[in-house]
Image 1: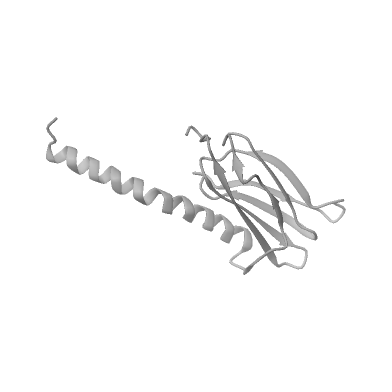
Image 2 (image 1 turned 60 degrees about the horizontal axis):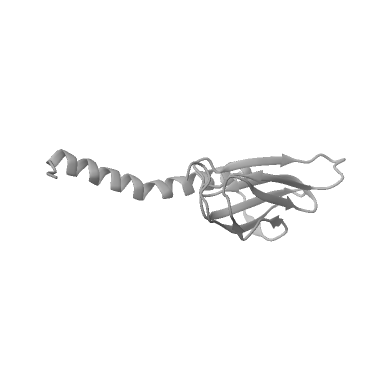
Length: 138
């Protein structure tokens, strides 16, 4: 097979795009965190994130999250093209500040839960989930 200069340039541009894409996806997750927190400091701990260590299928991964005294909890899948999964808001009369759902993961990645506490502070929990069969078309 003969490659022309144009074919070589197209292959090179494709390789560069595939190299840069994961950094852009991670930046989208960081942007979502900054928008939720308003740029405030986020402390580790204070949030319970229940996710499997290994998910056999990335299409339906069960996730549970809770934070005592939270007014809102944001859930992110940092490796997905659109990292925002859900935001759970709790009022003053909420019996408990917990939620569970099933999410779709594009592959092995970190799942992040950030809770806004009643005093205005933020807490964070992160869990790496290994996906053995890709979700999101993978």
